[in-house]
Image (cartoon, rainbow, N blue to C red; front, side, top):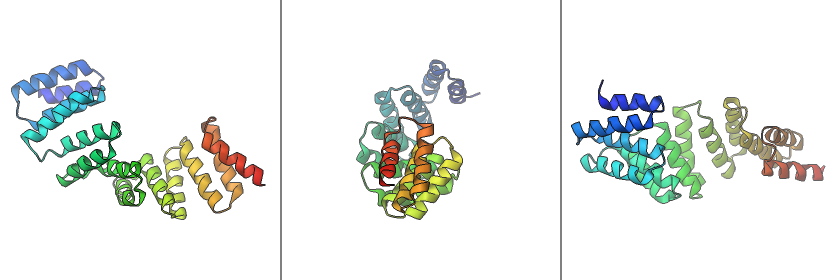
Length: 217
């Protein structure tokens, strides 16, 4: 078995040091393989060493500027650091060079959402849920953007889908409650706030929403 594959198998088993050893040996044998640099970078990023991970991603691009996964890795590092402008730039590059994975579209949507550009994020979240109907996080974020754009009925469907996929998603219940409150359906809104609080008793927003509705009745 190739040492790159051995490293990936070691990662699956949680053997980080063994995986790093195999990657290092693989790079000694194939120093111009960009995939090895990306994989090693992913390992370093997963273990919290994002500064070193960046160097590996950059080396992969230096060898082959079309290494889409390296751009995605760099984008993720910048996103985690809170630099959403840079993150979006690198996720765009990943897509440009052919990485048409749902995670790319999800992270493009998340970057735009963090930049308070929800309307621009909508098509990316839509594409993410199209590529993976079982991704609860993508449905939830898509719902948030729809709600912020004023598409309440469509947002409700996404929050309901989120709950179908993850029955313990307190934020989905809360936001579904907000949607019902917006429609002046207090009874359903209260039910949703109660569901959010049953899952997460310290959910401040759900608690405040419930209190406000009860004061109005």
